[in-house]
Length: 68
Image (cartoon, rainbow, N blue to C red; front, side):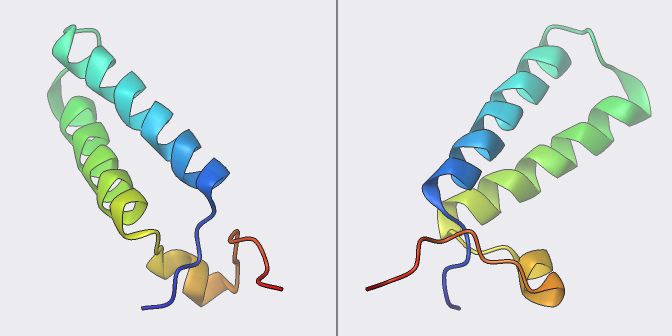
């Protein structure tokens, strides 16, 4: 797996994870929507930790800075 996520992309995903967690555990978003958002947050967490997004590979996006 070649890294295809830059640090800014990872930071945005982590902020979204925190926002989703606050909404869910604060009982603002509940039910099916809450569970779907938790699954999305889990995927964001996994891709942020690995610095690799399979969807980016399919679309051809690479947010990593170019190596010189």
